[in-house]
Length: 202
Image (cartoon, rainbow, N blue to C red; front, side, top):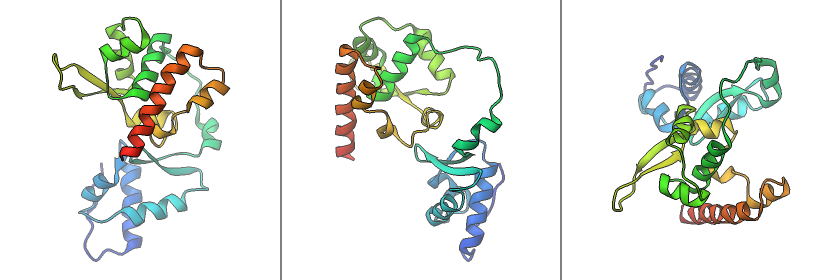
């Protein structure tokens, strides 16, 4: 990664160029705090705002996913860069269900996942999701046995084009798409209430 030093007297234009260069050179998306630390403690909020506006109608966009910033191809041009390739492994139904439960209920333990699904979860299922970079360990619950909990990652948000978990489809959206049977709808209702509760607590 290229390290750029920002002096106190650097103009806003210089800072915008420095933020732009840093994000282009970065191997992973960066938070505003990481950018600031990388650029000598500069306040990068205005630079990010102007870059976001500048790239809004261009071939690449500056996007924020899970409070991390990155450049990505404009959605309407993605087909030009998509390579046809054989997918080595598709997500099983079990992995898809576990990913959905983690997304709507995080942080959630394996026992809680199994209680929601009603069946035992294979250890390999969570391993597949972690290898894909969509699920991560999220610490241990302070209860007897201190079970490990799981949560989604910024890569999960980026892959599905979400800025945060609040952008996950709501119950009405899932019902309209025919993706919920009555049991699924009840589980989704619980997840939606938890999300709304979190939003009110923020």
